Image (cartoon, rainbow, N blue to C red):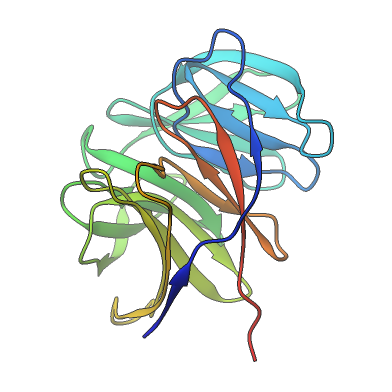
Length: 212
């Protein structure tokens, strides 16, 4: 396993009226982050929040190209990103113990925090298609270039882990500075990983290591 210190490229926030940051996703131009009662669109160039949607937003967030998916307690809401309307809901696999959320290959990938699991879920029905075991609390999930990454948070320690999607084996680990929490994770499709900062109210960009 490769292990190194996470390189934080930039910090965003804290933001007005945002006490904590939960899920994080990226739509190709804006970073969306969940803050309890809203999902907020952040311009990563300016650092400004350009828009908010009033919706329960307690954990992971994902984007499929048109819709936002947002964990709210024991359910996952599908939201029209243009109008902000909730178009459907499905049960969350952890029944309220869910954390990270990602969209990849036509499926939702849902972190189950204390159970240390990542579930591949049918976005129409909520049916669990398969489960990957992790060795740490899961707080964020993302896919990029065929790589599965997840965030962790236990005590005062957080890291970002690239794992084998078949076995759950940790292939690479980026250690966050002590006291820097990860409460959501999303790739920009390139060399950045956006991380929710929990009760700090911040979003952080971390450099994704290049493959040799």
